[in-house]
Image (cartoon, rainbow, N blue to C red; front, side):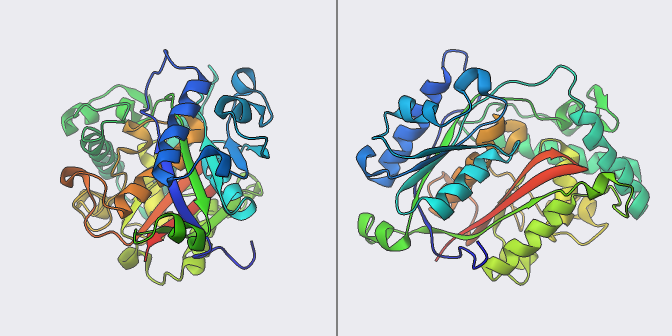
Length: 378
């Protein structure tokens, strides 16, 4: 871990189900669906898999606490299966486990879970990012609300082009701005729902990948960083409440690992954890893309639109592709992987991407975990 993982791991294949209310599909069905696509994309047989990591969250009732679920569902050939959990960042955590611990051929899984507590207060806690940001930078709340509406509008624009997305309806800005309030200033369209779905990646060394896929482009892992809150944000320290300390720390380390000096100029596209529009808003500064106090200006100028300088959520994000909790981090990587390989139709393709960044957040603003991955094509 200390030496970093840059260019030591290649993504051999990926698979992802359609997200949505998959009432007809059991967790095992979703796992198989993503795995079959992943194996076909990787060009290997199941008996070549040497280890597996399963990311899941709040799912003891559905799939149990161990790795047995994945081994049985996929009929893996008696290989090690490790179940990991890190809140909403569990999918990226599984990917990190496979990259660091299971080479050469290991799948990482993010699995569906559509379970949420009736007394969850996530909207209320994330809404406070907006008021803290407004106070810190003296940005009028109306401007913040306009920027959040643009974020939601952008997600629906992109999600409508994505056949695997949960929500594919175009929503006009006026409807977003006039939606019922959930937790001020977050309206209905500023909040993501919970979906069913599963995603999978198979990773190996670049040398093995080149033998399996000769004369094909390879997507390599450039950086993998995780930062976990120490609890200091909630201890009445100097935390300003206008962003996530974990994201700021993980982003700095990820750029250093990937050799990126100017992320605003070098990052080609992003998938970030837009559980709420204000989360994406604040993340633009936490990732050192927008200068402090300028995120609203960049958002409203279209900097993060699909045809902007750094497209953010080209697949619709958590807001529209969907959020099956633990599958989201791998879903983000699925989008970056396929964009880098030029597999999407022109209407939803990022132009000439080199580096894709994923930002996967778990928890609430004052106590969370942040996983950041940077992948690229040489």
